[in-house]
Image 1 (cartoon, rainbow, N blue to C red):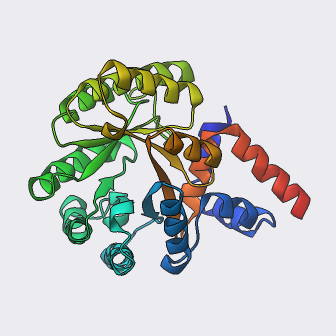
Image 2 (image 1 turned 60 degrees about the horizontal axis):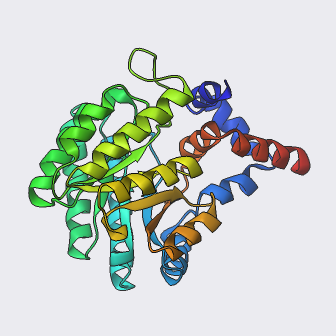
Length: 308
C-alpha cells in the first residue's frame, strides 16, 4: 500500500526538499494547483462560471507555527474575498479553509482559529457566498465541529466536511443532516490508525454510501466529494430515492481531475463545484493528491523520468 507511505512523506522536510527540487515536479503540481496568487486563480473562476460550474477556493498552507502566520493566512483569504467582490464572482465561488492554517494547533489554538476564521466567514457572507471548514486528521475534529457550530449561530450557511473512513462519521452525519446545514462527504486523505478508521477501500466505500444516504434523507444540503463514477451514480440514485431535485445537492471534484466529468454533470443539470487550490505552500496538499490515487503517482513518476 503506497498511500500510507506517501502520507508519511508529506510530513517529512527531507522529502519536501527532494520533491520540490525534482525536475518534473512543476508539471504535476500545475495539474492540481491553480496558481500561486489571487491574480492567477481569478481567471479560472471566471472560466468555470462561463462553463456553468462553481468553485470552492482553498489557499493552501497548513504548516503554521506562529500566531503571525495564522493571521497572514486570514489576510490571504480576506484578500481573496475582496477580489471576488470587485469582480462580482461571490455567488459562483465559496471558500474552503483548514483550521490548522488559522492556528488551531498552536497554544490556545481553538480560540485562535475561531478568532481568525470568523472575519473570513463574515466577509464571505457580505458578498453572497460562504465558507466550508475542511476536515483534517481525527484529533482536530471535535474542535472543528465546535467552531462550525459556533459560526453557524451567526452564519448558518457555514459548511463542514466529514470523512467516510472514520468510524465516528455516521453519527456525525446524523447530527449534521439538519435543515440549513451544508455538509461535504469525502473518503478522507490523512493517515489514520485502525483504532479510528477503516483501512480497507471496500469498507470505506460502503461507509461512504451509508453516509450519503443519511445526508440525502436528511434536511440539509449534501455535497458529494468524489471522483469515483460508481459512487457518483449511487449518489444520484440516492438523491432520486430521497425525492431531491438536482439543485438540492451538489457534486464536488478537484481541479485538474476528471474535467470532462465536471462538464457532463453540469450539463445534466447538477450543481458541480470544482475544488480549486492555490498558493505557494503546496507540498502537503500535493502529496495527499498523490496518495489518493495511484494514477497520480504514476503520472508524477513519468514526469520526473522524462524531465530528469
